[in-house]
Image (tube, rainbow, N blue to C red; front, side, top):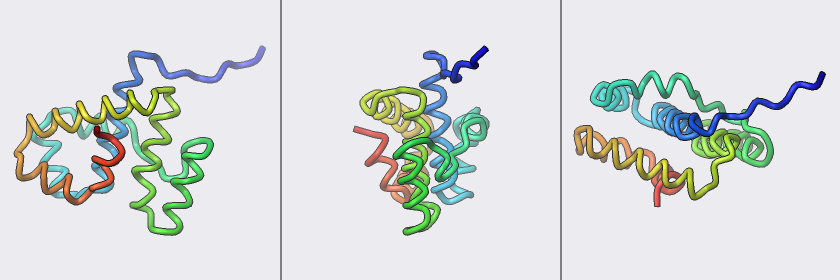
Length: 133
C-alpha cells in the first residue's frame, strides 16, 4: 500500500505560517529584544519553536534559493527565503501568505511596546518586504 504525502490541514495552514514567521523573527532579530517582545505577547515563543525555519530545508526552488542565499550572503540572509519556502509547502498562495503576514505584523504592533516593535522590524527590513502589503 502506498503512503500518501502528508498534507497540512487547512485549519493548520495559518498557524504554520504564523509560527514560521515568528521563528524567522526570532532568528533574525536581536535575541534580547525578541525575547522581550515574545514576553509581551504570550504563546508566541512556543509557536515559533513549533515551526523552526531551517535554511535549505524547503523543497524545490525555494529551498535551493534559501540554501544558496545562506552560502553566498550568510545564513541570516537565507532565513526569510527559507521561511517563505516552508510556508509555501502548506499550499498557501503568496497573497494568502502576505495577508497572514500583514495581520501578524499588525497584531504585534497593536499588542507590544511600539518602540520595541519598531526596533526589531527596522533590524529585519526583509520581513516587511516579504510578509506584508
